[in-house]
Length: 276
Image (cartoon, rainbow, N blue to C red; front, side, top):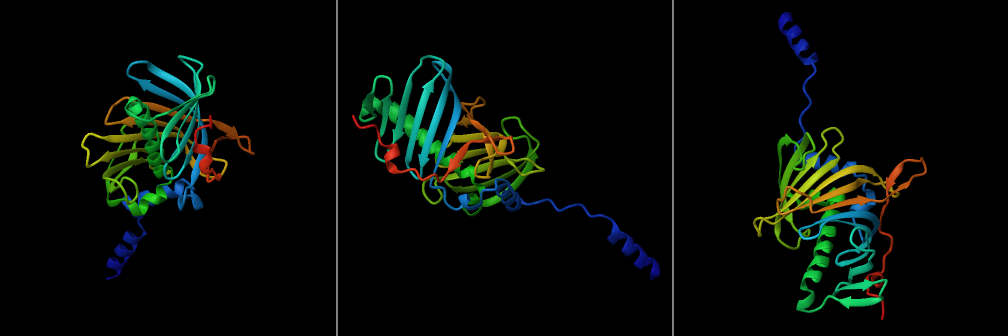
């Protein structure tokens, strides 16, 4: 009897391996790592300055300095300064009803209306949709309720070469209750749970997908912890289609911080074309 008790006590004193977190716990920890606070509940708008690279099938790699403003759910304004092919400076936007472009040098306004501007119009609408999707994963707390059938997959490098990463997968609505059903796979850093990458697959349009790879996470002026660089991948392509690098600014302690600001009070007028 005494021997049995001693054996039991010895077994209880042996450190037990930590229980592996399940998919829901990983998603919760990743949301906490973003330090979103009140912003996770409702993001009304944001303002950011960034450096953008675009891979164009015809023109090759193009580079731009960009200032962008977004207001939920359907307004976007972008100031673009081309760097590689011209010195063009123009504004592009969608005011909730229509897309437009304004050339600051020629002071010419073009409304993207009719069949002749279908490509331009779709480009602006795609950028608007990209911002919606990117915003969803800047604030993972909003996905805790939206994603269903969550499961943890075997650890692996994220699909663009980082890793090793924790991997979870779930299904949800494209627009949090609106739009089509999507499958979402996400990669998190195993020690900090920082989000490394996301792939969104449209289950109603096979072959259509959108992927983000995140890096250079830093604090923002509002105390969030968000990526400063994003690579965008479309429809399963191995090469990125866009690279986004947020402009940094110096914090009070002298460290670099990612200069994106949320809920700054943007009005609808910001997204209207200049009156001509």
